[in-house]
Structure formats: structure tokens, C-alpha cells
Image (cartoon, rainbow, N blue to C red; front, top):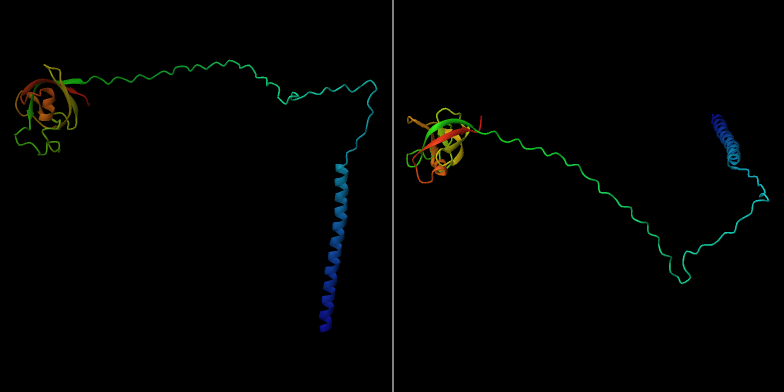
Length: 202
């Protein structure tokens, strides 16, 4: 049995050595073929032709870059080409559309409320806290939050305010103004004014 194993090992070793030698030989042959092809591709054959007798070499004149004193010659500066500044076409400016004029809604008598009559700090019909020195107005039918302009017919003074309450409930009156709104129309004191009511919000 040991002889059989030894014979197998020798046969395997022989195959390895033979394969290695075969590979080495193939590499040598292929390498020399590749070198021969490369050499043939790189070689460039030149043929020399004699210079014709009627052609002569002209005298070459040398040009000195600097004067013998060591100074350089003056640099030639190109003349500037006048450039034209491109004109920019004016862009049309969009004109803002003017706000539409408020529409006259009502004319009549305005009164003031909240100064000493117990409304200060209470909730209005629109659910806001009433403060007499804040610009607020009350109207019977305009929706809460509507922006209106109230103009004094006699003086032309005006105040813009939002509807925050309902009223007035006195016949002949069209709006109730807080003291903050009324004082912008008539700073002299509470009372009655003839006014025009314009709708700013629609």
C-alpha cells in the first residue's frame, strides 16, 4: 500500500512539473511573437532625399530682443477700440390698478356710545370685547367684520372701522360709533353727526 501511494505522489508531481514547463514554453513563444509584432509596428522607414540644386538656404537675420544697454524695447500698445454701451430697452412698468371707490351705502345720523353708559368691557353682539377708546362701530344690518368708511358730511373728516356690534336702536340713527371712532370725526365731544357710510369691503 505505501508503494501505491508513493507511485501516485510521483505521478502527480510529474504532472505538475510537466504542466509548469509547458506553460513556461507557451509564454516564451507568445512573448516573442508579441515583441516581433510591436517592433514591426513601431519601425518607421525614412528615405533621405537630396536637396535640389536650385534651392538655397537664405541668410537668417538675428533679431535682438533687448538693446545693448540692457533696456527692453518699447511695448507696442494696441489702440483701444471704442465700445458702445448697449442701450437697455425700457421695461414697461405695470401701473397699479386704482382701488375702487367705496360705494355709498347709507346717509343719516351717527351717535356715540360707550362713554359712561356701562358698555365698556362687555361683549359685543359680534363676540368682541367692547372698548370705547378703540375704533369700533355698530350697525343694524351689515355683517360683523365689514370694513366701512364713515364720513362727516359737514367737515369731510372720515374714519375707517369694522362693524363689531349691532345698533343703534334709536329711531333715525344709522350707526353708533365708539368714542375712539367718533373723536376722529368730531374731537369736541360726544353728540350727533350727519354722516355718509361707505362700504370698503363687499
